[in-house]
Image (cartoon, helix red, strand yellow):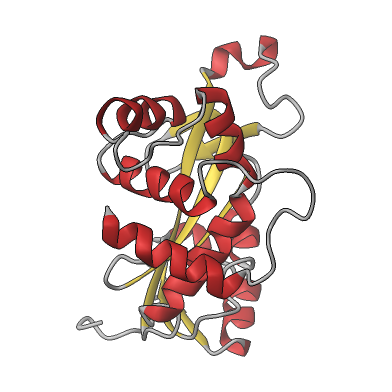
Length: 220
């Protein structure tokens, strides 16, 4: 936990030399502490903000004496989304995951509500959509996450779209910083997309559909 905090605090000071808040009083719980709580809490299996807040309040008050109320902690953590995004990019660079030779890309469903209840639901009414996950043979309502990792499994890029957005269109948001071999499933088959990848120095390879001829050697 101390190691994580020191890394995050050093990077926050490096990436944001100017104070993040120019007006008002800074929170007693520092931003580095809040992000450390999120990172460590998530790694320990606490996947909700409330769970993370309860865990640190009960067990780690001696290290984080200025933990605020649950609502204040959740608000502070949510407002740091841009900081966490910059931190993730910087750590990827430190681990040389962005210039690795092999990357993998895939999309996955994120349900908002049960599909049959979607017409009555007001949750993310303007943002969510209806989608279909071929690998799970599942129709769903919500969002689709799109994840790019390198061969060691280190996340390099992530984007979130409505469920009805084509994953090939979403992939463009993550490909500008990589090159080399990119592995995807059949959902990424599209001649124009493959051509665009080639122009970026990316060799996109996917399984082929049954009606497509595969000229690649069997060893591949």
